[in-house]
Length: 299
Image (cartoon, rainbow, N blue to C red):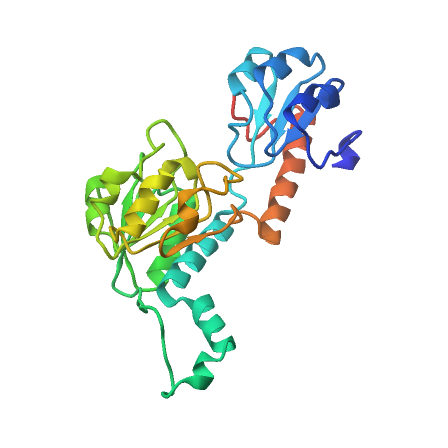
């Protein structure tokens, strides 16, 4: 990036510091720092905003478009990493690897009268049905891995791409997906239609044995409703990488929910995925400077 122009890096920038730091910039790159319409309208030199992520809701793209400012994102850098964490969460729910390892280290196996023990139900994935909500690049990666485990797959998506190559797959309605799935994995974007999609009513449609996974966006799930469902055995467990507010308040109800695994929004963050991300950011800026912009989200 330094080879493309004069580069200044700020590790973190509070909202009230954005204008001061960006006032002379033609190009602004942001990860989670919001670029508001007020700031956009006050930056006379700004021509380009690059979002260092796939989601670009931190930028008011319409305000930028009105000012003739291009906004780009970075699609497709992390599907393999997100799918990998999805199954890391699922396998932990099925095998309780960390809990059993901790029990061994604490001496429980040494004290056991038998040659083995297990403290939690162990679940085999082969033959189970996984319901995938959102069947884009990430959802399809998850389906590939599920196939390797011998799972049946049902999918729901706004656009139903050709999946005739998958002999273990069928498209279903959300209603049917909730009812038939042993595992439900969320990979859809956050929209007005998907916000709060997983709530008290939809959770009650699931099997008591269902595992729910979310590596997409936190507000798709109503946190309190999921906590209540877990604590009242409406579903069996959850593995989530995202929450409705991030960082979460200490009183988030899911922190005390039964059989709930929570990771701190790290599905995207393998070194390999971050390397692809930064390479794509450089390519985006280079393409803009050459007059042939790519990955523009506000054409």
